[in-house]
Length: 254
Length: 222
Image (cartoon, rainbow over all chains, first blue to last red; front, top):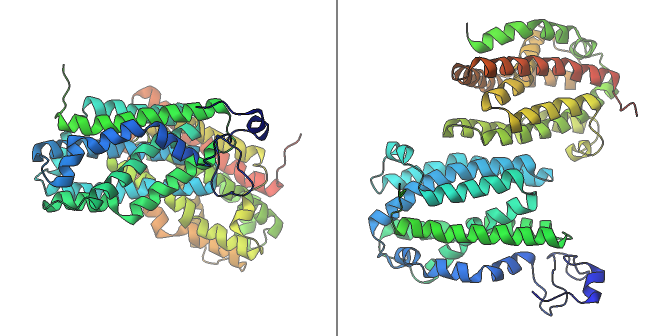
């Protein structure tokens, strides 16, 4: 990260330029004007590339993914989604303005109701019953990722909370679109999975989350931007580890 | 006798005094001054937003998905459904709902919402449910008692208030929450049940104080 020139420091890092109020700008010394979320994405590039390249993700894309590994993902993701509801609850509770509060409240309800119903129906297509979903123990990676997210949501500032959420929301949209662009697999259940995450509505949600992070980064002091970067990176790592956990059919070693 | 029934009976004298309060009496008679009600709506809308935050925070502690779902729906109801009445009130006064957002929370409103939020963040789910029950339950009881008197006030807004809070859908929602309270109380130890009772009674008092705050159009003394 280049040092800011004295001129840039006078203007203040993170302050919006007058000619582009729509996207907050950081790094004024750089000739490339970019959003804070783009900066986050660039920092996490190796991790995100590793996700795209992971045999689990590739296996969904070409239909070769072993069903037992995918079923592990379906069962763990169910548990993840429940914790994600708690996260949305905290996000709503701590939202800085009414619009953001209402949006998170809406996401909370959509996840707790619709998303969970869809997930149960989808699981049933693989022969996974509701009872099985409910008695599935949380694997080490699911445990670690969700506890991290909840800890940031409860104790970090709101900007960190938003930055911690972003890799999941944005990453799935990016992966869904990339897999769709590569041609859908013949296995219809994997094809539907891809279509769900490639859906424009999901992309719109990812965009909203990116805009929220950009807005929160606007005018934020350097140390807060650093903290946002750190949680974004940690979440990105956990996203990778989540695929890997299902690839490995991860269980507790003891 | 269920846990909720026990604490409801204990809190009954507080709610009798709510019913007798000049704010409620004035509302029922249609004589409550417009400016008092305007003050009340402005504070109440701010209150509801904070109440929604507290309920959202409480979701973190929900043990099962069904509780999360009902809480989530409750939060959305508070933000969109319940505020239909506030929207109507805003129109009556020639305002928009957002006009009620700025401005200070009065001392009593501040104290009440901070209390509920403190319980949400630091107490158990049972404690939060106990703290957040007086509002919907109490309003439902008061509105139904006023409706039972037979004659709605001539004032369109006050009549709407009574009908809104006496409605069945609100009652069903509240009944579910009371049943949840009983389930949570059954799983709680003596110390937690004592705290739950304390929160219910304190918030019942805060409900009386809220109407009184509005009646006096309370301001910060300094």
